[in-house]
Image (cartoon, rainbow, N blue to C red; front, side, top):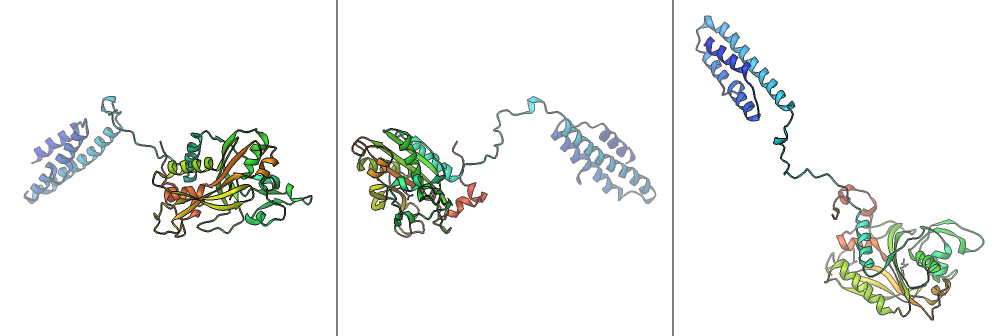
Length: 344
Ligand code: PHE
């Protein structure tokens, strides 16, 4: 038996493991419970008592040597440089964890894409605005209740008259005025941006949100152009089955005015809290640019007409992704944000 122990010891010391398979073979033969060394331990039980002590000692040495050698061989194999022949270049790479765009950005890009294809430019204007561009030029009469339709965050109240008051814009319609002041018709642009209103925060309202203003001023622009443009938008954004309706409404800066509803895609008309169980979701205000507004910007209403609309990006997004609470957009919860994968 001593001889066999010696042979095994020699084998263990001389063993070279070129690859993982050879390493595993080593483990099975010399270290595992069913290996040659364990077998010898079984045999040891039958050995006469007087030899047991010496044999047991050498056998234990063999066991320890084998275990140490396994450790050594494993380390050798792990630190060995990988030859290029072993790298499979055809394997797909491990994908990087990409961040993704905010759902409101995804929707804004989609809206821009749709209107750009209809020939609209993209413009923007200031979020901190004076009363003139946010209200007066848009035909909001002084001290008229229409001014209170939109609860405003004022930054600076000037005593000289409200037109110079500084405020956070309550809508993107201020950019209409800035464009018409600076450009001669034809004007065809959309103007995305953030707007602010002093409102209690709930599932349906927030103190800040986003709009896309649209403006088209040229000779012979009519209500039919407005209708067709928004009809096209609805089909592009929500698919052929979506429906659109115009409801008569009032804005000081448009005449006639209409509110635009899209059929509720969330509940398909059955009733949900996004459409308040009506089957319709209001996504925009619109109308023909009021002659006074054109005049305020030195555009002759006898020569030019135009349409305008202001669309809520949150509303469009809620309908698009079936989101039923506006607050989710501004809570920065990654469990929510991660669900909107980048469009590659
Ligand atoms: N500015 C209006 C709002 O915020 C929307 C609108 C824009 C209506 C343009 C008509 C024309 O409610």
